[in-house]
Image (cartoon, rainbow, N blue to C red):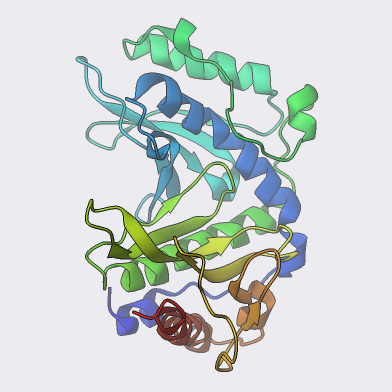
Length: 293
């Protein structure tokens, strides 16, 4: 994906104020936990927990879980966030079933997931919502139904996710050591980890990460981030160059942040994409200097 392609495929943001997206994000975040837990219980577990993560599929406009293997045919769960719907795809990427979450409780949704697992050849008794990481409490945890209200908020967040996948994939592909760009169900960020230096055993000693984060202690709206890490803990964040867009922060982490509201100031898709690509380009250059690589 070239910078020209990013610009031509960028979806114009700004139909909704970024700070108003939080309620929709919270609903989507809770919804993808069913996908993550299906990964936990039906995919071989690996130390980095990547068996629970999700991939953005631009054609289908969904966040898709990893493939679950089955002799009858592999399948995967997915979330179409623009209308808060869970789906299942077969190995040909044909839709097997859909389940709109609006008005459904956690228990009702789990019942649907188990029903589908049984139909697809799995032992549904293994499926549990035993989330093994901390996520903010939500009313759906206590029996309240999911709510698909103000559909424009969900559509806007889907645009953010699609755009971020375009631009983050472009920058990650410049490094052979980079992870693939994925959404992680814990913090619900969409990003890539890029190790840059290794010890004699092949373990990373320096790295940086890029991604799109959701509202948290770093920002009250969606934001792009760049952050560095070194095993020695000697990252020097002094005398950093001013970024063309976004800013450097020291809390809750050392790194750079570009808020969605700064991106959406422009009413041009071309300028919005340039804002993000310039932020990432210059921020990565500075981060490599911080890491002395």
